[in-house]
Length: 397
Image (cartoon, rainbow, N blue to C red; front, side, top):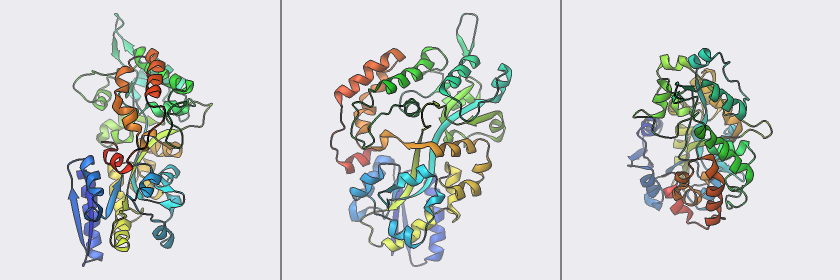
């Protein structure tokens, strides 16, 4: 008997190897075949290989309903019900991402969401209080203005903030919190959503930070964005929880973290991504695969602590046992999972319709937003039918 699993990520492979080691001790007659493929696209191709593909599927947030309907993943609810898996232990947005109409397609292992890091010294120098949970977009902009430093000629010597631009990462939650969206809830329509006045206004607000010289757009030098923040070239840094892991203890003590700024007139929403593992629909021994999946992914089994080293915890048990719940940098990101909303990019066809059309290359200034977004919608008012399996291969590539 054997279980087959593949990944393109060496850090994930190390966790999978430990799970396999422990599993073999309990199932000495079972071999676990691990495969490290070169990239995400190669992984998806392996997962579509039918009976020759992996038994355990690595899933990265693609719309779960479509994954189940296309036969890429199998429904695990018979196992979770039978073994009384506590799905309520997962944060609500995480639980929602892996389920569809009472079906569960994967067990989540780690998540990502975004917030704002800030340099405590810069706030202290400016005599500003540290940002507090529930701060608004206007407060965020005003703080950026107060933290920006210029020389006598008016040239920026230190930016108040860096906001990622060139893809949708931090723009979509600004859109949501302004009452807009990229895409209809059924994942089909851009017209009336991507070109809605509230969406356009949010793009203008975001790009306005760059137009005003409060944030750089590109070209800050050879260093990465996080290095620029660490070295004091900007006072706030809008990014994901993944920026915490590379920080040394000394650097962590210099910085604080706070949730994404919101609009008090709208229910708060924030972007999140989740990674998990499910069972292929072509798996020949689903009972055996489930036994391995429990070892690999369920909270409280020990392997979950290894996943939390790589990224954000997906469950309250995981958050507490890993120490993230008490960590001053991680805790604000866990709080943000209360407001998690899945991205339009989790729907097949969105990347090809919007992201791969060089849309952001033509969004240079706030004044460009209305024209560019209307042009996108005129080109693709509705996402056309796609070969979901093919789109799944290229998802996120």
